[in-house]
Image (tube, rainbow, N blue to C red; front, top):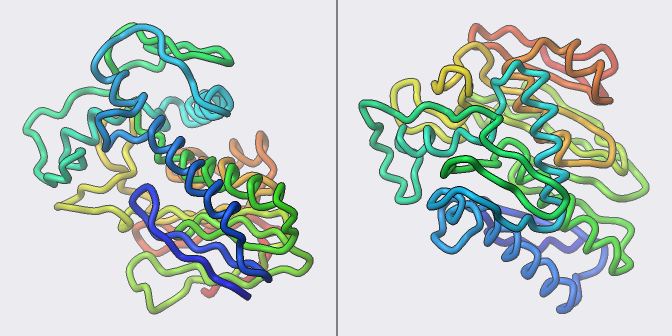
Length: 286
């Protein structure tokens, strides 16, 4: 297997293929990442997200932008408002800002109401300047976009790994360890990831910068969540869905999410308890 490793949107990526990726495929991947970042990044001044933070009104949406927002709308409803991409300003005020100051404000901004934005297939409209953070599902969407590029260039056996957001495309399953959130040298289990399935992991220790401060915010309170510390989700054919559901499992009862979306899950609580779905494709160590 050939492994292409690179950095993008603030994290490490690896694309494993049977044949080395041709230059035109790599160029298409790089262009897709740049377009995605120029739309959705809250860490660069020239992005659509940065423009939305400066002024209210209408803004053009990129490819699959409406699909991403539709999905966020479902997650918002299923979690009673806990998952909401309008947490960007609050995250920034808590110290996870464009300058990575890691210094929290004494009075973080409240999270705007979901009704502050509306959208259609081509544009998003805001009633006030808002700062989006699509980290709960955006990286998964980018994995899906890159999967389409690689597959459309004629490759049928490959795996994309965006630091724990994985899409597997092949003929045989792969085994993936589920990293313990408190000790990267240990695993809480393993998963057999079938072809055309996606695996996404989320943990409060992934981005932490102070006492009780991390990136998984409850939009209802504007504060980091405390009960669940890590989740893993396996979903068919969409890393975006697996990614978003991994965040939703911090807040919603599993039955609410499994009734709406086909997937399997594992979630670990702060007290060490681990729960998982009855058909999870792997083994959990207890």
